Image 1 (cartoon, rainbow, N blue to C red):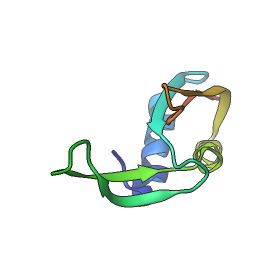
Image 2: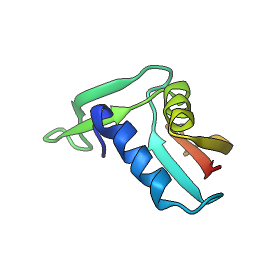
Image 3: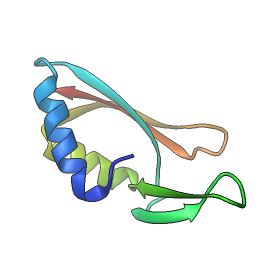
Length: 90
């Protein structure tokens, strides 16, 4: 879990760590068209979870801004709650 304020730094570090044409795969819960960050109900009534959910367009823009090229993306899971994407360093 990465706060939105740190995601650009994390993506830049990932970019530097990959060889040219190296790839990474990301799969994360997404915001169903909205960016959302903060505390939400956890998996049980007694718990809460901190989330940083990006809309697919926001996530794609952040990755492109970091220098990555999208190879593929799709929604996965029974409720399509996860956005999966494959990226390549140019």
